[in-house]
Length: 104
Image (cartoon, rainbow, N blue to C red; front, side):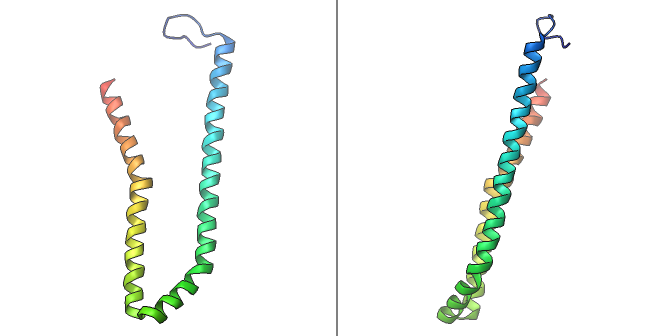
């Protein structure tokens, strides 16, 4: 049995509830990973279908060099959005965790 902060022993019910909460957190994280993976695979599939059609149409309308410039701009925009939405929150979370460790 674990000793809680008051110095008394944790009851079996309390330990069981904590275990259930931890298991539920893992299940939710797993579901989020599954949804993210499905969304990424769907985007790749739809992109493989739509990209040649849009690229051909765009090349006919504005020319090859302008199409390359547009695609480069879109790639840069997507990388910035990805950085802000994915990498930056993880970086900030790591920094706050480090600050909490320093305070203890």
